[in-house]
Length: 257
Image (cartoon, rainbow, N blue to C red; front, top):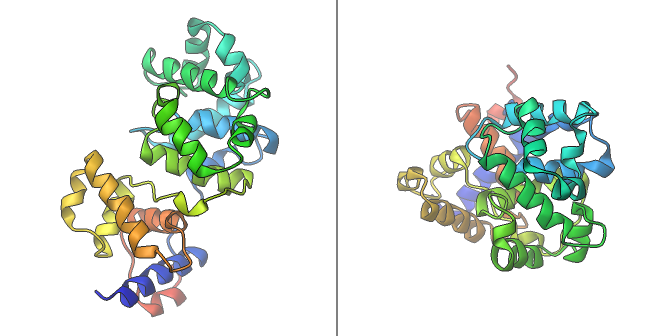
């Protein structure tokens, strides 16, 4: 497939997403809309994302919305409070609505990330963390993936980290510096769609760390100079895979079902 043909397919996929032809217009994080105030979204999205690993995303975010709605468990979304809490109290609160599924590991992750956030600025929240990094993705990558990686388990991993950047941009309106550094977050759906488009061979479907890195780098290279950032194609790719890869033929843009 030629570069022009590949980019035409990518742009068509984005158009189909814009027309609502890929289904799944409701994304997992939409469960927070109308429930969590805009000012609290950075904290809730960030802490929730830290547990968004090898589990059903829709169920996770519904659990998070339920925990936030309950005033007795809402405190788990305040990093400063969590950082000072006992692990036993945190465990009970996280298990109440199944925000945590693993009674030991998940509360430890939540507390570590909360403590890392709390130490990042005088505000002690995610807004302060972003401000301290000057909204610069390069700075955040250096801090969360290298110098202070141990404080941000799961969240520092390339898949979740890049998707976290995308979700923050989508739901909180943050304007990132160095936005082109946000890669696709290569989960199973993204990798299947990447293979379907012919950008990578089916070998990457083994899903190893190296496979995910290869997919992310392939998208960076493929979109360089196109006017598109890799993360711009994330949701269209994800929904295209979930929808069973409907045809990218032009006439499909005018088909309703």
